[in-house]
Amino acid sequence: MLRVALAEDSVLLREGLIGVLQRFGHQVVVAAGTAKGLLDGVAAEDPDLVLTDVRMPPAFTDEGLRAAITLRHERPGLPVLVLSQYVEQTYAAELLDSGRGGVGYLLKDRIGDVTEFAAALARVAEGATVVDPEVVRQLLARRRDPLDRLTAREREVLALMAEGRSNAAIARTLVVTDAAVAKHIGNVLAKLDLPPAEDDHRRVLAVLAYLRAGSG
Amino acid sequence: MPIRTAQEALTQRPLTFLRSAWPWRSLAYLVSGALFGCLLLGVLAGLVLGGVLLSVVFVGAVLLVAALLAGVPVARFERWRLRLIDSEPAHDPHRKPSDPGVRAWVRTRLREQATWRELGFSVICAGALWWLDAGAVGAAGYTVVLFLSAPFGRDPGAWAYLGPVIGIGLIPVIAFPLTAWAGARAALTRAVLAPRDAELGERLVEVSQSRARLVDAFELERRRIERDLHDGAQQRLVALTMTLGLARLDVPPGSPLAAQLDEAHHQAKQALAELRELIRGVHPQVLTGRGLGAAVADLAGRSPIPVDLDVQVPRLPSQAEFTAYFVICEAMANAVKHSGATRLRIHGRVLAETVLIEVRDDGSGGADPTLGSGLAGLVDRVAVVDGRLLLSSPPGGPTTIRAEIPCSG
Image (cartoon, rainbow over all chains, first blue to last red; front, side, top):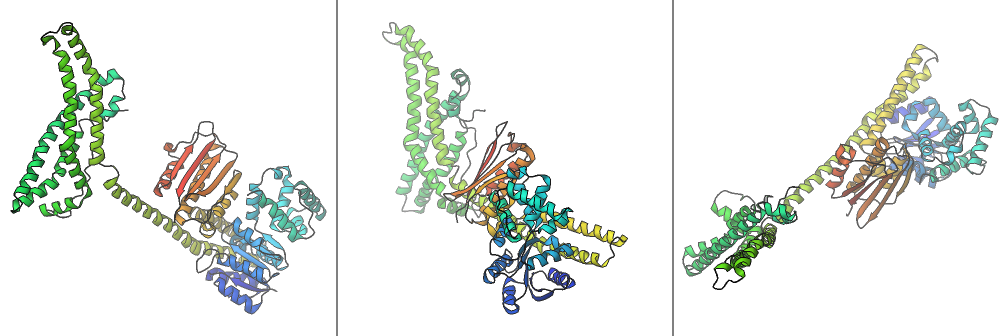
C-alpha cells in the first residue's frame, strides 16, 4: 500500500485516478488541483509517491512538471511519476535529469491499461526509472547509424531498457530466458560503447543519455 | 513583356522603337507640356496678382485660395496627360472629403500633404519645366529645319544637297533624346503626383496591421481550440479508457464480454491517440511552454526522416515563434511528402532582430510554390509578419527553404 499525493486539475480524471489507485490498494492522501496545492499537501502529508499532471492552473503550461522537479530537488528519494497528455522530449529530459531515485514519465493514455499502470507506479515507488515507450520510440527513431548495427531483437531489448524495465521484465515481455536477456544486454552495451551498469536506474539513464546525445 | 513607359520603349531595338508610336507620343507629351505650362504660368500669375491687388475685398482672398488649390486640378490634368507615355494608371493620392460641399472639400484639401506637393509641382511646372520642354522640342525642331532649309539659303553650295539629307537623317536620331527627356519628365511627374508609397503607404500599413491582427486572432483561436480539446474531449477519453480498464479487471478473462470490453478499450485508446495528433497539429503545447527550440526538437523526434538539428534561439514574441514553427513544420512535411529526402537539416538563429530559419533536404528538388503545395501558404504566412521566404530547389535537389522573420519586441 502506497500513500499517494495526486495532482490533476480535471476533476473527472482526478476522481478516476483515485478510483484506479484505490482499486490497487493505494491510499490517496493528497488530491490537489493545482501545483501549489500539491507542494503544500506533500509538505503536510509526507507521501510515499507523487503522481502529477504536467499542465495545471493558473497558466496551463508546465506547472505540474515544475512542481515535480522542485519536489525531486527538495526531497531526494521521493518517487515522482509525471503524467503528460503529449510526449515532450524536453519535459522528459528535464524530469529525468532533475535528480536521482524513482521517477517516471508516462503518457496519460497508459492509465487506461490499469494493470500495467499500477505496475509502473509500483516500480517508480521502488526507485526505478520508467519512461514512456513513446519517448523511447522517438529517441530510437532519431539515432540511426550505430543502432543499425543492432539486431532486431537487440533493438527491442534496447527499447525496453530505455523504458526502465528490469532484466526479468524484459525476459517476460519478450518471452525469453533471463540468461538470454543478459546476453542481449551485454551485446547492446558493447556495440554502443556503454559501460555495463550495476543498477537498473543508472542503466536507463546511460541508455537515454546515449539516445539523446545523438539527436542534438 | 509589354512596353509600359517611354523609358522602357527606349530599351527596345532601335528600329522597333522608331516604328512604334512612342517617339510621337513623347513629342506630343512635350509639346502639350510646353503649351500647358505656358498657360499655367499666365493663370497662376493672374490669380496671385489679382488676389494681391484685390486683397482688400473678399474676392482677393478667394483668388489667393484658388491659387493655393490650383495644384489640384493641375495635378489631375498632369496625371491624365501622363497616360500619353506611361500606360500604368497614376492614382489620385487625395482622400475623399468627409462631408459634401465646397467648404469640406477645401478644408480637406488644404490639410493634405499632397495638395502642397502639387502646388509646388505646379510652380515648378509654370516656372521651369515648360521652358525645358519647349527648349528640347524647339532645339530639335530648329536643328532639323535648319538643315532642311539649307537649299533655300542665299548661298547653299554643297549644302543644297547635303543639308536635306542630314536633316532627314537627324529626325530618327533626335527621336531618342526627345523620348528620353519625355520619359524623365514623366518619371518626375509620377514621383511627385502619384507617389506609390506616401499616402498609399498609410493604407498599406493599415492593411498589414489588420492582416497581422487577423493572424493574431487566428493563433489565439487555435490556442483556444487546443485548450478546449485538451480540457474537454481528451480528458473524457482518458477517463473512459480508465473506466474500461477497470471494468476489464472485473470481467472473467476469455468471456464474450471481456472481448467486447477489450475492443471498446482499444477503440478508445485509438481515438485518444488520434485526438492527440490532431491537437498537436492545432497548436503544440511545448511551443508555448518552452519555445521554438524545444518544439522543433520535438518535431524532429517524430520525423520519419533523420534530422540534424541546430536551432539556437531565445524565447521570442509568440507571433514570431509560431510563424517560425509553422515554417519548419510545413517545410518538413513537404520534404517528407514530396522530396524523397533521406536527411533533413534544420538551422535556426536570431540575427539583428530577425529569426533566420533554414530547412535543407537532400531530396529530388523541383519544389515550386506556384504548384499549390504547402509552400504557397508558407509564403503568405511569412509575408503577413513582414518576413521573407526564400526557396532554392533546382531539379535534382537539394531543396533549401530559408525564412527571415522579424522578431523585435
